[in-house]
Amino acid sequence: SIRYGSGAVTGKFGMDAITVAEDYTVRNQTFAQADSTDGLGAVYEHAKFDGILGLAFPVLSRAMGVNTFIANLQDQTGVDRVMFAFYLGDESDGELAIGGYNEDRMQNPNEINWVPLAMPAYWLIAMDQVKFGDTVITIGQTGGIMDTGTSLIYGPEDQVMSMIDAIPGAELIPQLQLYLIPCETDLPDLEFQIEGQPYNIP
Image (cartoon, rainbow, N blue to C red; front, side):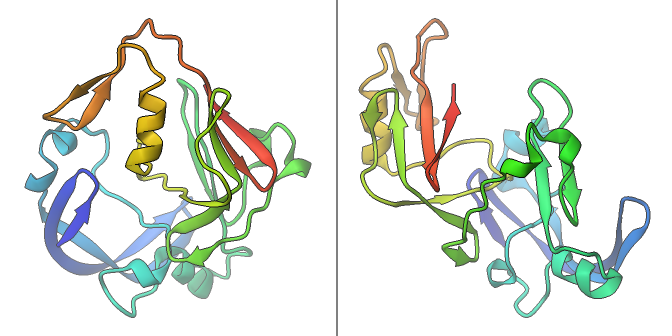
């Protein structure tokens, strides 16, 4: 049984060969086969995917002592770098690169902001601060998890509420425990500062 933010799934472990990019194959990779996705409800019914590829660290695995796909990829194929990178398309196709990154997808490959991990479990880093418009939401370093399996941005309730209070017309939908914001609302940017570099979400 595994519980995600959107609900729980149950199943059993299996093994199979996994091939990426047509020429890199990992044999005897342990993975979870979901027998029931009832806990996800309508989320799974309407989702445009049929599985999840875990890219975090083995310590999070429900199958203790089992290597992740990326670690096995290096062991079995000798791929140069245990690295992956995402390109998130804006109303266009995205891309997952394994074993490096695609410089053609980058504005300036020489200006990568390399950030140390706070802990090798989730992809947990230290953020310098978080701002909502001109308002500083966090003071001092704050942990942040980069998770491509999540389409939402979560935060501590008091910090989220300080942003909600600044949004006119924001209304709580009790059944979902989410806030509805009128489309015509002019929202300030949400800014994450990481290793001195600001990242704005309009």
